[in-house]
Each structure stands twice: as structure tokens, then as C-alpha cells.
Image (cartoon, rainbow, N blue to C red; front, side, top):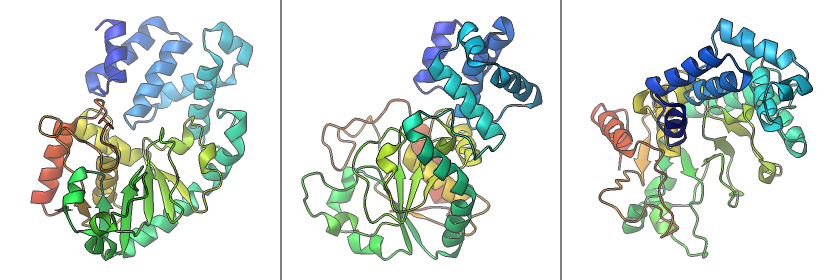
Length: 310
């Protein structure tokens, strides 16, 4: 596979084994720092960690002085990516050198509290008798599910779910919010009444993001566990949507027992629906997600009584 083709395939959301193998073959052929970093990032994008030999390569590169890494062809941005990989591998919660300076204090705070917050959230989820996962499908506007949604012990919502024009649609979507799931690139308003913030993606707390808009959030901020992301990618050969990744985590994470979530506002089909988002007529669904495969898996979960789809 030509280099331009497989790099573009990965960028477009092809996370298949063949694309990963192309990254690995490129590194093994070139033996360059850039090729190794591309492979390591692609491996992590699929939710996997480096093997022992690859960890040694990472360690050796991380020990190099910055000027040597620059000489090897890495940009300063790539050096920060390398540092983040090394810090995550070593669970180094005392370092955030891979994060831009203005975000390091926040990154250190998030990383140092992840274990405590994960335990706390898992305990709440394990004790909950009912969990509602509320997507942003415009189909919700045709319903009167608000009271039903709010009757659940825990309610999970995503990104921009409140109307930007101030319109009251609580009769359709409810008001309660316990866990707010944020895509890494989301820069909209943060709901003040969220009790937890979950950043979707492969444990993004260890990756390089500018989250200064979260600095004043008055609640725990967690990353989706890497192992859960890996499980989702394996089902789809693509990066899962925030909604799919969240439901997969609730259903299959063994640390959260006996959860059968209720899913509302899901089921986007690009071949049948022109409108994607409840709050924005022109907002388009990303083509990086494998919507057909997600729909098939959700239907399977429903048939297996793992998911209550409404």
C-alpha cells in the first residue's frame, strides 16, 4: 500500500488491521523516528499499547535531547507527542511536558486524580438501577420523553445538547444531567450542572489537547478507558462515535456490573436522514465513523437485551 494512501485512509477513519500493518512496515523499513512515532500513534488510536520491543524504542527516543530529536526529523509538536506516549507508558502523573505550557497545570491535575475519579464513577454506575444515554438525534423533538429520561438514576448527554437559542425543549429531552460526554475537539459551552465530564477518545487525558476551557469546571474530568476504546474500534475498524463508545463502555466494562442502559436519540442513517443534529440544522455527521457498523452492533445489543433502545 502506497504511503500516501494508507496515511490518508487512517485520517479518513480506516482503523483496520491492514492499515496498522502498513504503518508498522513503514517503520520497520525506514527505522526512522518519524515512522516509529506515526506507527505508535496509530497503534494507540486503535486502543492498543506498545509491546516490549516497541517500548524500548520509545524509551531510547525519549532519552534523546530535544536537539537530537529535531535532527532526527521530529518537529517540536511531534516531540511533545513522543513525551506524552512516554509519560503514559510510565504512568508519570508528575509530568506534563508533552502538553503546551499554558495547559500543563490542568493536565497534571487531571492525570493525578484519574484513578480516584474512575473508582468513584464506577461505584456510582455499579449502584445505579437505571441509566439513560441521550443522543442528539432530531427524532427526540418528535417525542415527549423528557420526564422518562429524568426518571433514570443517571443521565448521560453529549456535546451541544441544549438549544443555542434558549428554547425550552425539556419536554422532549428532559433536564437531568449526571455525565456529560465531550468530544476532544468540542469548544462549545460546558453545562454547569454536569456532575462528571467524560472526554471521549482513547484515554485522552494522556494525549495532547488544549482544554483550557475546562479549567474552571467544578466536577471530575475523566478520559474514556483505553481498553474500552480498543473494544469499540475492534467492532468497527473505525473510530467510534461518542455515543457508541459510551454505550459500549457501559455494556462491556467488567468493572461496571449489571447495567442495561436505555438509549434515546440514536440511530443516525446517512442514507435516509438529511438532518443529523437536534440543535443545528446544518451540522453534518463526520464521515470518519462507520455508521452502518455502529447501527448493526446497536441492533445486536438490543436483540441480546443488553440495551434498551427507545
